[in-house]
Image (cartoon, rainbow, N blue to C red; front, side):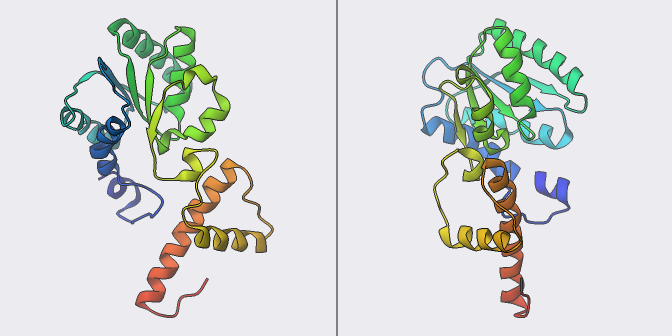
Length: 219
C-alpha cells in the first residue's frame, strides 16, 4: 500500500493508510450529503505510481454509493510551472464537461492550490471533496471563500482539518505541549501545531511500544 511503498513499511500513527482512505472517502462524503442529486464527479490526482494505485480504487468506491467517475486527470507536481499549465487545461475540460463535484487526491495541498487559481480564472466553482492531505484549515486562511463554498472533507488530523480543532486527547496534547515548552518551543498557530503534534505522536507511540515490550525506554 501507500505507506509500504513510501516509508519502507513502518507504521506511522499520524498518517492514514492510503487504501483505507480511498475505500472510505466517497462513502464518508456521501454520508454528509456531499454529492446530493445530479452529481457529476471528477478526480484530480498527483501523477505518481503510488497515487495511481490508489486512484484505481475510487471508481469502485463511488459505485458502492450508486455513482460513477465521469472524468479524471493526473498532474505531475515536479515542475510547478508545468503543473499550473496542466491544471488550467484540466479545469477548462472539467468545466466544459459539466463536472460539478471535484475530488482532489493531493500532496500537501499543491494540487488544491493550483486548482483554486485556475478555477478562479475560469469562473468555475464546483463542490470540492477534500481530505486531510489537502490541508483544509490552511487553505481556508489563504483562499477566497468562494473557492471553498459548500466544500466538505474527511479528515484524521484535527489540527490540519479545522482552525478550531476539538481537544480529542487533552492528556496527550498537554504532555506534548509541555515537552516542547521545556525546550522553549511554541505550538501556537495552525502550522506549528500541525507539525509539532504529528512529530510528538510518533515519539509517544514508539515510547509506549518500547516500554510495553522492553520496559526500559524513556523519553
